Length: 181
Image (cartoon, rainbow, N blue to C red; front, top):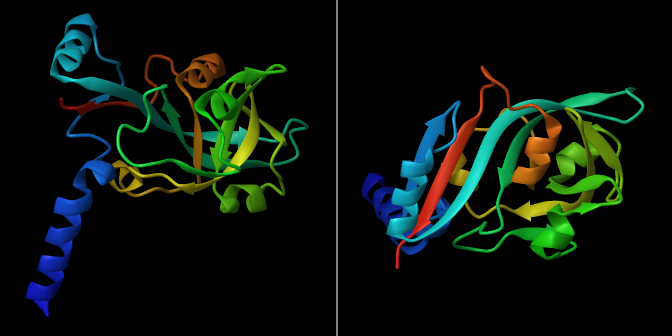
């Protein structure tokens, strides 16, 4: 039985390892982004996707309710492998871009239910207004992000910057995934 489980895990890793890791190589930096020399090194290796993870509170605009969320802010290269599954399926710009004073986001059903929301509703994340434009169905690299204490809120790096949440001392993790040529 143990050998069967080990073989199944091995087959899954060899067949889907790149998707689950989100790249061929993954670098993590805590409480700071990569400096110029580090970014140049990553780019020498191949195509780079940058993301940032942190926990925060998402609030309803009227302040009547809030929920802890696991924020994942991604760039335009995300995901390097696999496919982001959302309902509705939107382009990166449609999903995350700034429209009518709000950045876009995707979240799983549990966040919609917890805050009694539907697609198109807005929340506040720090100083930023976030519009929940899609339900998050499949995040290809979620396994590599580890255990989550709260529902995911998938936003853009621009939205995270606009939120003002990243400050000295913030518990933020920067992740650089590289797709080798």
